Length: 158
Image (cartoon, rainbow, N blue to C red; front, side):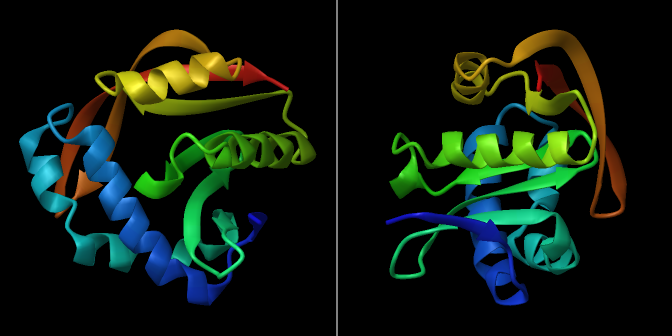
């Protein structure tokens, strides 16, 4: 049995581990090399704890973290699912929860950025009603440097 719930402080270390793994799965080779090098496990552990209020987690009955989503305003900022949970419907459940949160905040559409080269993620979003609205050069600061990550902007009416 999987449950979807708001994150708690104790969830954030496993979220950081999963975020690191999933980020490298989807971004390596598709973003500037310096950004990939700066995205260390320690860096994810530093940036994750303050995000507890933005985060919703999916956990298995035994408490194992299966995935998470972070929402800020009308942006679905992060969606990551463990390798073991991919293809199980967990990502769709998290995405639906993210959309519900965006709508509850009074927005009539949600948006997200997806790395242009991450074909798996792009297919997933399109399958779930998101529309590719074009190039989005996403500025990211990591390791004291600013990088431009080649992304696509996806939008979904709520």
